[in-house]
Every structure is written in C-alpha cells, then in structure tokens.
Image (cartoon, rainbow, N blue to C red; front, top):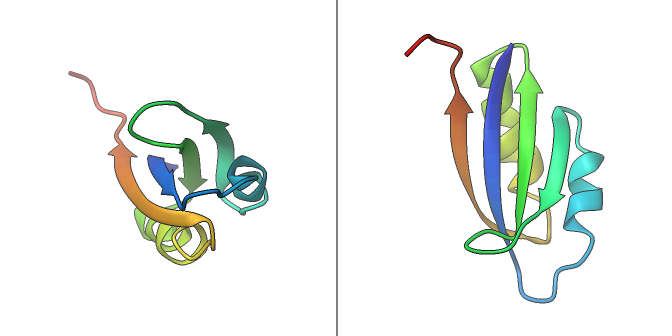
Length: 78
C-alpha cells in the first residue's frame, strides 16, 4: 500500500474543499487546517504511481485547489 499526505492551498473564497476531497477515490481522510495550508488529505493506493495520478489528475484539477505539497509516506524502520 502506498500512502501520501497532501497539503493543500485553496483559492480565495473556496468553500467545501474537504467535502470535495472526501469524494475523490483514493482519499481516505480529509481535514481543514489552519496555518500555512488550508486542508490536508491522506491518499492511499496500491502503488506510488497511482498515488501520483490521484494527486496530479484528481486533486490538483479541483477548481478550488490553488497548490499542493505531497509527502510520500514510507514504512521503514528508523
């Protein structure tokens, strides 16, 4: 399972981004946030390639999304 956290900046006046994110296939969680980013989403898929496609073609193409920052999660011991 490949996972990533996607930090999202929305366009001014955008509403309902969390509800829209929750409808995206592959988004397992979505939350509003305060600070540098307006929302954060957890994306899960079978491969990193699928995660990339979800972020690139589904999340970034949403009309309310201005910019994203993606952190790929790894399950490796420290």
